[in-house]
Image 1 (tube, rainbow, N blue to C red):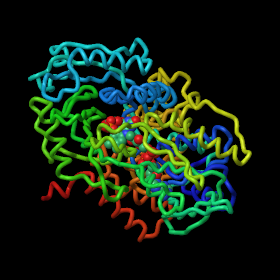
Image 2 (image 1 turned 30 degrees about the horizontal axis):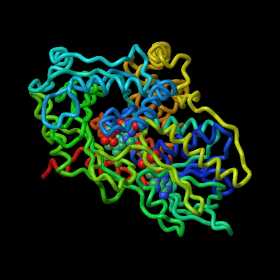
Image 3 (image 1 turned 90 degrees about the horizontal axis):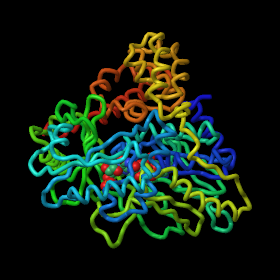
Image 4 (image 1 turned 180 degrees about the horizontal axis):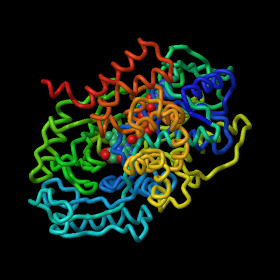
Length: 555
Ligand SMILES: Cc1cc2nc3c(=O)[nH]c(=O)nc-3n(C[C@H](O)[C@H](O)[C@H](O)COP(=O)(O)OP(=O)(O)OC[C@H]3O[C@@H](n4cnc5c(N)ncnc54)[C@H](O)[C@@H]3O)c2cc1C
Ligand SMILES: O=P(O)(O)OC[C@H](O)CO
């Protein structure tokens, strides 16, 4: 069973010829979670994504699975209680992607500080309680000396104490694609690069058809569905417009930016969550990842094209000022920034709140007169629960059509690659299966990396050794490309470099080194014309220029 460009062609044929019970518009984490939930219940479900899977916000987050500690400042206890409990569920179902770890919240005595030593203890205690955190990961508070022993580069002036608490690191695009692949494994009919353009109605004015376009060849086709769900995140209003039943805009997307520097420039040993020091009610994360450190984010109202929110000089100045304020002996400049990304929070408008950071990160599900169901808002960490909530509404729509399906508990369904015997001992799984990689000619580091990256899908990776060896590149990269083409519906170089691997963000030099050989291999495997090859190559060059902030560095 594959999930390739050929699968995509077959799925487009299926969607254009057979009615589905449910059609999901949007292939970010929210749409992916809905598709997995539906397929697990035996619902005939289709999903169309106009870019690549996770091409929107779900590859541009802070890349954490977390409960939203700072939301307790605005007493969003219900949200934190729901979202924080999901961390352990995702950690169990995707141990190859999501890792638990102690994060540090330093406590400073400074204007606008979120917490003091006492309130930090209270809020971390409440966070553990709401999340039902295991005792082994209980929070603890240490004094200033202990904090500086752990993080010697943190600013000493004003430092009072520090709280260590549990949260999880993540790879948002990997979490999305592994959810998509699991939905595919369970029977969902899924395709990327297909855009919902308009709707068709039955005699009662209910949506029963979606007019879709394959954005690769601009061919349009109709998809017949009993029920349609709009899971397009920040685009939710865009998707709802041009319909008689449109009840007005609900979304208030805010932009969040992250920058990546070499770890030597910002040598933190663990994730740090701290005030910006700019008295703006904002907190930022500083996160070590491999031999890099990334940090963010901003939270500013956004207007413009949602596909690729631009980063501004203000964003750069704000985050550099925040980091240089918080760390002694660190004076990051624009030239230290190796890569970056900007994403849009799919926030729901709050008429009573003009502070973007004060708006709830909760989700809403609503049905309009023509039957379109929209799920908006939320957090990536909450995606599974959001799907459960959505199906309470979707099932009502099915009941009106006298259609019913068995229930399912998705808590017990591992994502693709996550079905290890003991998810809490994933390192053992890596130890056990990296030997196959070294036997195939990989060095130990690459062999362990691939098992860590793909989990139980590593066996499908190794099946592609023959194909990989035909590519003119190091074996590890060749295996990742071969697997991505065969099992992760890679159609463009950016799909590979930005979302199936993390090279564009965390190893941009590697993108430049591998670009030609990857594009040559993709042309051969996907049958690109010379013109298509040139277009994809130019698109990748533009993306590299954009994420490395060249326009600002060359000013
Ligand atoms: C800066 C930032 C940091 C964040 N950090 C975290 C974090 O660390 N942890 C966390 O839990 N949450 C975090 N979030 C929130 C989280 O990223 C989002 O809630 C989540 O990714 C939204 O997923 P989604 O699927 O709803 O939207 P998206 O991922 O945007 O998916 C919507 C998809 O719909 C597609 N689409 C749009 N229109 C159409 C159409 N007409 N036809 C077909 N497809 C269409 C788009 O291409 C897009 O891929 C963060 C958000 C931001 C912006
Ligand atoms: O939406 P915020 O303000 O919590 O910002 C996103 C964080 O960086 C991670 O969720």
